[in-house]
Image (tube, rainbow, N blue to C red; front, side, top):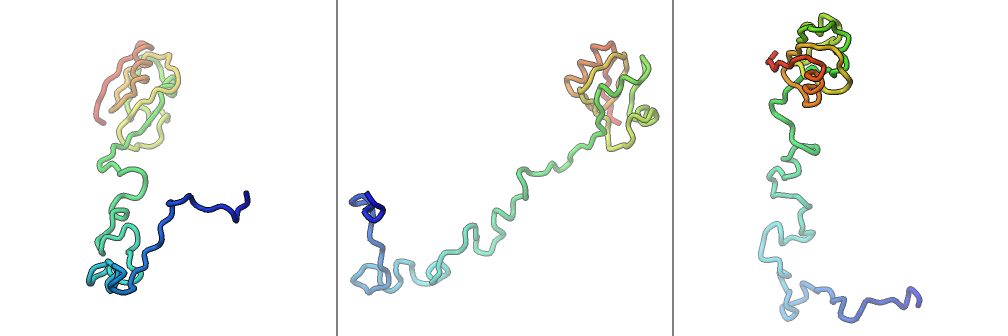
Length: 149
């Protein structure tokens, strides 16, 4: 078998439609495209996604993978492991952490994350805690207080 011997299976191909070849051919004059208008012109199809001049869907939707959160909460985050340097039974807030130099900038309310180990009993006041951070603080003998700051 050679490449020049290959051909499609019998009945797999149809002959192309010859339009504009007179009334007897069945597709004469307007060639099945109707009377007038944009869709009847030569070079007829509009580009994919074209909506007649209306702002197309692909431009109306936000650009990347997901829609932005409108009122997104900004947190100053810190891991539990960074709190080990504080003395026992200290009340931990965003202000006290900035005073101690553990946190350098106020990016919003304080959120405690659960990375690292905690060996000191502390009273931690923050706007949000991860589940693991809450467990580690309470396991070390400390307490968790949720407060809006």
